[in-house]
Image (cartoon, rainbow, N blue to C red):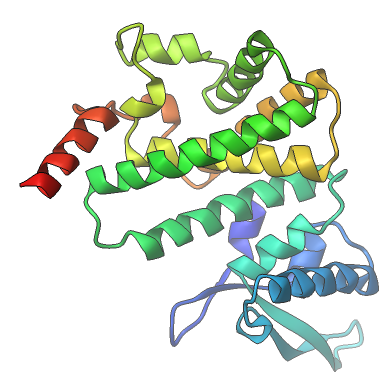
Length: 269
């Protein structure tokens, strides 16, 4: 979301991105600070529950604001890291479209940073292997969440998966993507994606699973629609950040299977 990018601040000493809670409150359409602070307190509890130091991500500050008379008044505010904002929007009102958009934005930004911190020195192929392994794990969890939502039969799950791809790939189906990549019938599209494309699909899978469980969806049609909308929001965020659309990313020369064979050979040698 462009509005969230616009209110982002960068620390002068360490270059850390942060947002002021008062500015975020306005973007997320909370008219009363007292209501928004309740959401922030829930986010702090979630932070504690993850064994993360709350004070590292939520910093109390004082700001001077101008009044209509020209005078100034001191108000309390909170400087919040990307992770703090992510937890806050996850605890916001999911019925608001602006909250759903913010959830997508901060989820993608947070995940990108996690990957950047984890893989700064890894070459592209090793990043692909790591992301593909993580995506396999999350796809299993997504399948479980989909089943709980009423997506039971294999043909139903195939439709559910296609909805997610269509949202992310501008209405292209899994078959369409397979064709664009010029793959054989037996080849899996996920095994022929670069790290950027894999990361986009990982965001899609993790956020869909979380939303299905969080919203308690128990209807396969709603589950399909949820997967489509999440994919579309991930795509929208990529666009707003100036990224390349998934269907326009290049297909790597080597498959994941080929990379795994090379990796095993190195271990043997």
